[in-house]
Image (cartoon, helix red, strand yellow):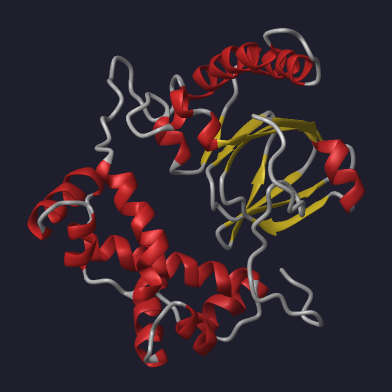
Length: 287
């Protein structure tokens, strides 16, 4: 939570941790101790606009903060955090582990719409790592920190092995096939992220996607179980929850920030989403 004597009105969006220079490589790796020890073992809540991050946490006491909630993690544990996911950590001194940061656009073969692993770029995951994954991270670090002739190709090969090892059993029952995701859903979600504060009607989203409103509704229901308007509102309410959790904006300011002309209507919609008022939500987090 931000220091109340110095209000912060935006959740930080960083390339890494507080670094605003363009991402310099196709990947970045570091040990938890190399970054967290210099920050008093606390990584304050932030998000990355274009990075997918994989954390492999091997020892220590760890509190994971995500989307206004917190969870104690018992190592060994792995986390996959897609772009824009708000996250932070409290580590005990001496915590061991790795963090791997991947610019999504550099790994289209894994993460682009239609790729076998595309689902990992859309939803956070807490995973139980296979014992071999630690050795693979060490191997990946050796390649990443070196300067061999085929460095980038080797990085991609070992990274693919890591992702497959982490996700081979995630969300699948024995013998089940992965769910086939329609690529229009990620495009709709990207449009929502860009335009939700302007409160576009569903028909305008459908037109931008080259679809009829009816076909968009059918697609959303099939793929997500939600109507298009419910997806739009859920995005706005998640953003409201983030602003309540990680800034000191009041509810009226948040309402206007998210394009709601009537703060009382925003309050009613947030109560329907969270089963409590914005003020009660913030008080619960502050406790």
